[in-house]
Every structure is written in C-alpha cells, then in structure tokens.
Length: 157
Image 1 (spheres, one colour):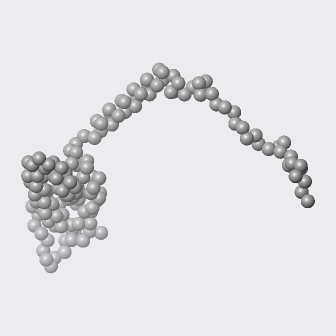
Image 2 (cartoon, helix red, strand yellow):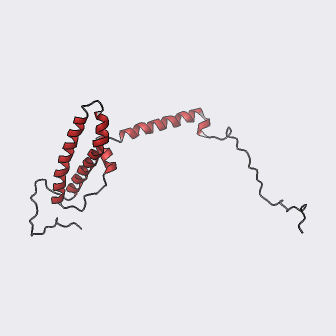
Image 3 (cartoon, one colour):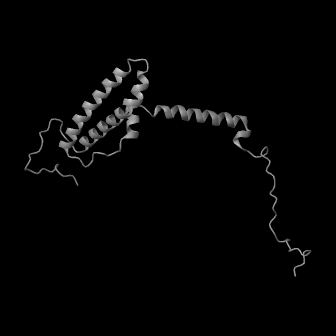
C-alpha cells in the first residue's frame, strides 16, 4: 500500500515562481519621452513618404489588384489587337454608363456598385494587353496573318 504521508523529493525541481520584471528600470523607448517623440516623428515621416510612392492614376493602381499579371502572354499579336479593340470599346461604354448614372441623386452609388468593378477589370486588361503588345513588339496597324500561312507569331511557346 502507498503511504499517503510519503511525499516525493522535489528539492531538485525547477522553481515555479519567476522573478518580477520592473518595467520602470528597463530602457524601453516608451519610457523615455524624447525617444517616444523621435519614434513618433519617424513613423509619421514614413507614412508621409509612403503616400509619395503611390503616384499615378488611381484606376491603374486599383486595376492591378483585379487583373492577373501576364494574363495575355500566350496570345499572338493578332489576338492582342482584337482583344484590345473589344476592351477599348467596352471601356468607353462603361465610362459613358458611369457618367450617365452619376447624373442622378444616387448615381454615384449605383455607378460604384454596378459599373466600377467591371470598369477596373477592363482597364486592367487594357494595361496588360499593352504590356503584352510591347513585349512582343506588335505593330498597331498590322494586317492579320494569312489563313494558310504560318508565322512566328501564330503559336507562342
């Protein structure tokens, strides 16, 4: 039988109590008012400079979030030209719809909810089409490839 009065020897055990840490004596930046002012000034300067890096059209910045990069890499010049024509026409139509919706009292809300996401998507596609066209050295007014002939731009690998 086990004796209930017998206790295990715990003299070699790790102490459970941890020493208290006095934060007033530690040299943290939050305890020194001069350091706190310097940290605050540095943070505000960083925020101000971060605003300077986001130059450009807000539509371009927002459309980059929606459109996949290199979406049209595998397209040839003829396909890029055709999609560019369709996308530019759709962008103009959406701009017209947004302007028309903006005339009413709740038009800005309607335009933002109904047309803005598609407009940003089309705008991003146009930017990607331009980048793909520039990467492939496509010419704007190029004639389409012959139906029976093969060119180096027919298949991209």
